[in-house]
Picture (cartoon, rainbow, N blue to C red):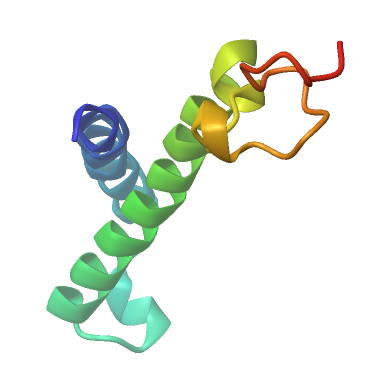
Length: 91
């Protein structure tokens, strides 16, 4: 939940700023759409791009421990796994 907030809240703010800047320079009626549709679609498009950027940043900030951790409990790891906690495990 914390990562979702880290992704969605800043991207919401960026989308609002991007929409203001974009539609200051471009009239939505020039696109052949009503203003309401253009503003709504533009906001959600900007929000999606900003959220994708924030999500990619969170993905790249993972630590080595998060990336390399084994999802299996120690007893279920294959024989020979160095992380298995038994005397027959390979080093």
